[in-house]
Length: 153
Length: 263
Image (cartoon, rainbow over all chains, first blue to last red; front, side, top):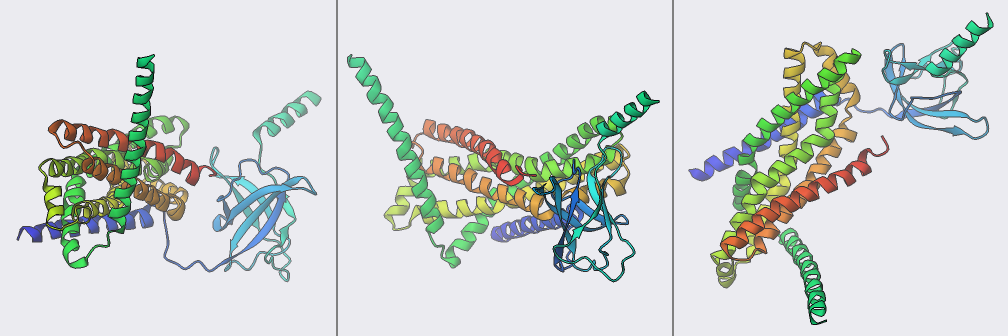
């Protein structure tokens, strides 16, 4: 009967391990079993993409609809080129949408916020660009502007 | 002049010995991995080893995971509260546990708790000539003794690491939420926003798998290759703990650079 005890112990051990993995997956990393329904890529050029990184969120009205996949320099326009992956079920981004780089909280992470426009007939597709963009807020530039205004008064 | 050549010869011999030891270690590993287990006889052996290597290590893993999670939350809180971002404690505890601390600390504890026991056991079998008696009656000791222990270590370490992370995060929550009064919703929300299942949890699992191979490999090899005296066993046990700890810490840096270097 000693063998039975060992088998029970090993069984409990395995179960606890699997439960831990499940807990890490579900409540720690927030993994959902919902099927990923594919995505499409859109691009936006920013004057300044400071603080934005790959894996940053892309949101619309505060709801995450995708993520940033790549940031590089556009060689022709010498601006930051941000590649975003938008979930396939988000099919209502109009071509005159605007994208801005926002900050979560005072010191929080940067993310891209998208606001849709009025052109209901033209929807952004794979490879399209968002033309209307607003760069991230750089504190030094703001202070510089403020000081400049003070001096000129 | 005579002593210079003698010293050179000594140096060369010790280098050659090391190289030969690495070769023997590789052969033991190959044979333990290749030795195709016969399911009927080797499954009970494996279960037995899982019990002694894994189940009996559970207590130390759970207790240390709990305390490390609690300490992380406490220290993180004292720093983050200065910036008014104490909600980020959950994120900090979860990321540092899942990515680094759980695989590394579990592997170190495992080397001390199970690795040394494996070495001592196999070393004593060799000293009391159980291994050679097995060979004499036609049982391959690599298949019968080494292989089940190796596989048991390989299976156990990732499981123990998962337990360590889960218990540690729970401990962090105990201190952060229940004691220091961080709002529970933002504690979990921050954590879920920052921890990615594939990038963080699975990479931690891969790390622990690599550590499992290294620690058990060192342990069984040191036992199998020990000098068959009581002093030899004690030296082999020490070597197991030292070598596997150093290997785990060194490999951890390399794996971290590979996995998280670009994040």
